[in-house]
Length: 356
Image (tube, rainbow, N blue to C red; front, top):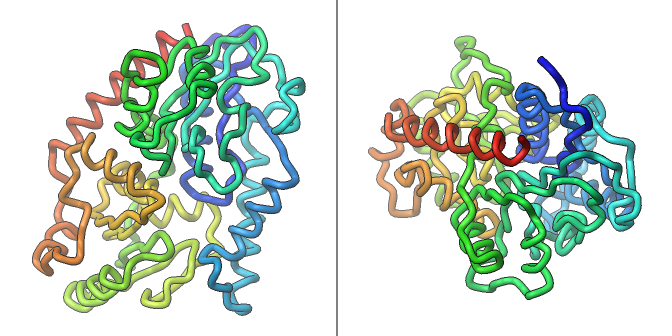
């Protein structure tokens, strides 16, 4: 396989202490390298962002304080993320807020993740993710999202002008599709999140006989916790919380790093989540799942469910016990797999055309 004559830089939130952020960054880089490109993460740094990430990592349910007994586990988890990211192909480190220091590459792929979210608590409105500082390189986006910045709120002319500088744009949700269409005049293609697009780069595994349902997220609603406790009793399957403390779960693995997370999803009998990538990993492994997205993640999860014909997996307080029994045990509807295959083919075409 011939490598490209110059690197392709991936510009994303690769140092977030978040399983989804890590795996989407890793899968995009490894997927592009498998396509023949010398891809690497553009390793931006900001002391302010690092402090914000660590505050969030140690106090994920702020303003509620983390129990002192759990702090060592949250610290160990964050350190595992640092080590995992450091092992990925990366550019020399440069300043997030100094556009003159962006390394030279032949192309810059902005995304995935919510790189254009104007409401992100510490990355909001960073010009780098809109192409500022990119010199003499092809500029494109792959599976970019505006997160919880709703299309109804629009974007200013200055940011829209930045989006018009991109030679090719793709997004991962309908909310972003509408915002980009208004900015650029045409609707961008909808593509798969890198974890779904390059699912062969996600570690696979099998259940080892220890049946458990994985609980992924924090701040899950009380009604869902109660429904899961009742389902657990009916099914005889324990609830294992990963990455966060959920007091209603039977067991906890707060300190799990990115590799352990992928392994636990692969071995789970079922999964409950309020996070976007919780749904994505369940889809990768064909794991039965339910989701009740938090307000912050609502746009992303809703649009994923609609795009993949998986609306049934989004539960509400009105969801009946019998429905949980089906959703957390039955294989996914074949229509979901067919839709993923269709979008994967389109995503491959987009990257091939955009990167040449």
